[in-house]
Structure formats: C-alpha cells, structure tokens
Amino acid sequence: TLIWKIILRSLTCPKALYGGACKSLCTCEEKDGHLYMNCEDRNISKISDMKVPSDMPLHLNLYKNDLVELLAEDMDAFKNAVTLHLGANSIQELEPGVFSALGSLRKLHINSNFLVMLKEDTFHGLVNLEYLQADTNFIRVVEPGAFSKLVRLKVLILNDNSIEFLPSNIFRFVPLTHLDLRGNKLQTLPYVGFLEHIGRIMELLLEDNNWMCNCEILHLKVWIENMRAQSSIGEVVCNRPEDLRGISLARVKRDLLCPSHADINLEEPSKSLDMVVTPSTKVVQIPNVNDGTKVPTPANGLGTFCVPVCSCPPQSMGFLMHCEDRGIQRISDIGILEQSPTKLFLTGNMIQRLFKYDFVTYDSLELLNLANNQIDYIDNETFLSLSNLKKLYLNGNRIEKISATMFLGLHNLEYLYLEHNVIKDIEAGSFNPLTNLKLLFLNNNLLNTLPAQIFRNVPLVRLNLRKNVFMHLPVSNVLDQLNYLEQIYLEDNPWDCTCDLVSLKQWVEKLSKDTVMGTILCHTPQKLSTAEVRNLKHDVLCPGLVTYKSLPGDTKDAIVATAAPGVSTSGFFRSLTEAVPLSVLILCLLILFLTFIFCAAGIIVFVLHRRRRQAKKKQNICCALCLMHSLYVW
Image (cartoon, rainbow, N blue to C red; front, side, top):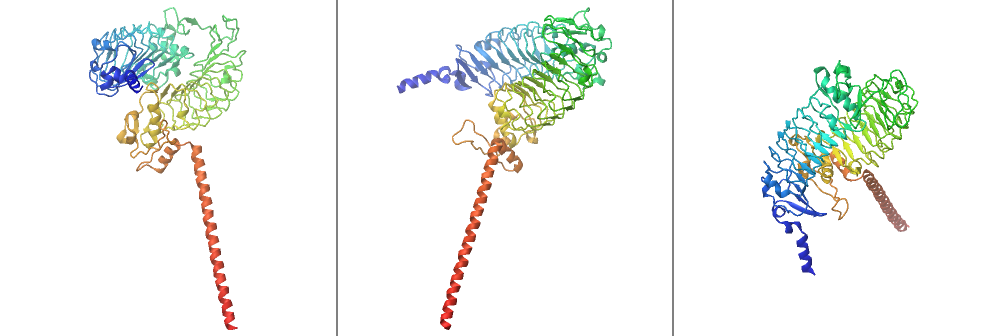
C-alpha cells in the first residue's frame, strides 16, 4: 500500500510529471485541471528556455524577467495558455502575428516593457482574448488594425503611455466594457469613428491627458454628459488654452468652448449638438420645454411635465431631467414637480448647500448627478427620502467632511462618487447605512486616515483611494472588512515605509495581483523613496522585526507586531493597535490595572498586619519587664 501511495503521489506531482521548467525554473501547481506556473523574477532571457506541457490549460507568469524579444515559432509551445503575464520585462517590439498560435488565451499582460508601437495584426489569432494590459510602456503609435481581431475583448488598459492620437474605427468591432486611457497625450476624442463605437462602455478613464478645450472637444463633452447615466467616466481637465488650464471640461459651458457651437455637428451635418446620444448610439432631439409646455407622452404612456429651467427628453423607461449648466444655485430653483424624475442631472451649476428637505418630492430618483458644483455643506439626512437611489455623484465639489448621518436612507445605493473634493475627515459609521454599496471613489481628496468599522456591512467591490495624503492605513477593523473587494487603488499617496506600514504590506500580499491597481510607492524615508512597497522585505520596512502569532499554533493568519530599534513609542503603539483589536487591548489593560490594584492592596494589608504584630510583641515584652521589675522591688 505504501509503495502504491508513493507511485500515485509521483504521478500527481506537477514537478515530477512535467519536469522541464517546473523542475528547474518555476514553481508549479495543478488545480482543477489547469497548470499554474509561476516563473516570476527568475532571470529568464529566452522564452524558448521554457518547457511546458502541451496537453492541459496553462497559466504562465513570466513577470519581471529579462525577455527582450518574442518570436512566433517560440510561442507555438504555449498554444494551451489561458493567461500569459509578460509584464516588467524588456520587450521592445511585437511583430504582427507573434501570438497567432494562442487561440485559447483570455488574459495577456504586456505592461511595463519598452514598446513604442502596436502594429497592425499584432494580436492576430487571439480570438478569445478578453483582457489586455499594455500600460506603462512608451507607446506612441497605434496602427488602425491593431485591435480589429479582438472580437471578445472587454478590458483594455493603455494608461501611462505616450499616445497622442487613436485611429478612426479602432474599436469598431471590439465589445469593450472597460477602457483606461489615463496618462497619455490625447487632445480630443472624436464622436465619428471613436465614441460612436464604445456605446456599451461601463468604465472609461481619461484623466491626465493634454486635452485641448476648443470646438473639437465639444463632441466629447456632449457624449460624456449623456453617458454618465450608465457609465463611470473619468474627469477631463483642460490643458489648453491657457485661460482654461486646470478647469474640468464639465464646468466649461459650450458657448465658451466654441462660440459657434450651433454650427458644429455631432454625427452628420444635419444634426446639431443639442442632441442626446443614447446607449444604443441613436440620436434623439431634446424637445424645447422652455415655455413650460408638456413633454410628449413617452412610449410607456406616462405623461410628465417638465420645468422651464430643465430639458426632459422622451424616454421609453422612466423620466429624465437634464438641468446641466443652467446657473442653478439651489435645488428649490428647479421649481415644483408634478412627478419625481428617475434620473436628475445637475452638473456644472452653482449649488453650494443641500438642505434636509430638498429632495422630499424626488422619491423615485434612481440617479442623482450633482458633480462639478460648489457644494460645501450637506444637511443631515438630506437624502433620507431617496430610498430608490442607486447612483450618487458628488464629485468635483468642495466637501470637507463626511458626517455619520449624511447618507441615511440610501440603503439601495450601489455607486457613490466623492472624488475631487477636499475631504479631510470621515466620521465613524458614515458608510454603514449603505448596505448595497459596490463602488466608492474617494480619490483626489485630503484624507490621511479612515475610522474603525467604516466598511462594516458595506459590500464594496471597487474602492479608489488614489491621490490622498495617506502615510499609513489601518488594516484591523478597516481594510480587513472588505470581504468582496475586487479592485482597490492606493497609488499616489505619501506612504511612510516604516514599521507602521508592515500590516498594510501583509494585507496587500494576501490579495491577488489584479486586485491592487497601480503601484504603491514609498515617499519616506528618503532612502526608500519611490521604492515599490510590495517589493520590499519586511525587515527593510522595519529593521529588527519581531513576529508574534495571534494564537498558539495558528500559522495561517499570523499577525505581526513590530518593535524595532529607533521606533518611537507612538509608532509602536499604533502598530500594536493594528495587530490587536482595540477592545481586546483595552480589556487586557483593564485586567492588568485591576491586578496591580489588588496586588498593591494585598501588600499594604500585609505590611500593616506585620507592623501591628510587631507592636503587640513589643508591648507584651514591655509588660513582662515591668512585671518583673515590680516583683523585684516588692
């Protein structure tokens, strides 16, 4: 029996079965009929050195090696690859058809290389590819047919390159749902040949480009305004002309961008820009309702009256009110409504304060967009009546504090956008009423900490904390409550890479690589400036690190508390409170204090009792002497 067990074990062990790279270069694991090969940071310079099995699905990780070129004949060996990670190598060029043999590939990472061009048919043959990551290269040119064969591609990441222009019809046959174009050199995106082909987009990231805010970008402005109802679209900030530099495109009125915008066409010369582009890319004329007349009855038979200050396009589902860029200063300026809209757009106005009863008559709202106003005060329970609300946009305002009662009543809210404010403080319990919240954007604020239990019962899937002022971030009772997390952004914060950051590093290491987006770079101390936190060893972050396990024999979830030479008492106490729940720590201190009191009392009683005995003994001796003296005298 023992011999048979040994034979069976040898047959099921990937290293013994496959040999090759599994024996000499990589670590291998077989799971659910798939082979996972981890060859990260092994100084591999030729992909032909990789010997892989040819009879089962393969997940190959070649991140951070020394690959310079890929040849089509070398790639034939990976025909069963499902995921291929080639990030952080030294690849300078991809020849057309180099991946043509990889028909089973679904995820491809070519980020952090030295690519300068994506040629026509570069990705020929990748008919099942769904995810392509090509960020942090030097890509300047994307040829017209670069993505034309990717008929199943949903996620495309191209941020932090040098792309100035994207060819017409580049995504005509590509069913994208997520597109990242941040950190490039784009000046505009045309409707015809580009925006018209991404009508099913769910997320489009456009920050940090060289946007030219003139007549040509008017198409993009109109498209964004009408797509925000169904999509998450990053902020476009003007780079030129000089008088508009640093201003959000959403805040710039159309006639300032292009005084003759009535003559600019969105799709055809016969169609003006005063149109709404629906998700199906059809164009619907907005009726003129400035005279307060009744909007035509929608297809569902629901009659609605619009107010003079807004526009209400007919819709087959629901009642939409477009009140963007109308100079509105208070919600009450909209007037009294006969019926609550399902979607209300108030971007680009001058609203400064939201009051408790502003939305009492808006109980049917599913989307409320208050982005790019001047809001600096929100009354408690302002949104209490909006129990049907699913999306709330408060980005681009002047909010400084999130109070504990601000979001009461929003138990159906799924998307909350708070980025580009000046938020410094979030009170404990602020997000606890949001029991269906999936997406929370807090990037581009002034946050330096998060309170305990802030994410309790909040099923977040995406959390954005980029560009705040976090030096440390508590894990215990904060980050460890994110049980459903799929994406988190932590980059562009001034992280202090000392002992206090060890718990965050450990937490990040437990997550998958696709969960933590971007890089986490040290800001201080100087010797670790710009170092990637995930690449640092624990003893570099905290020299003299001491490891304490939370429970005897529990090695799976060991908790590390740090005590190192030169670390301040306050820093050590902060690390200790992150490693041990505060309630447990207080209870231990209370027990220790009571023990000290009882011990002190016992010692005092003992001393007093001893002194009393000694005094009584002396008194007895004195009495005996006195008696003897009196007898002698007598």
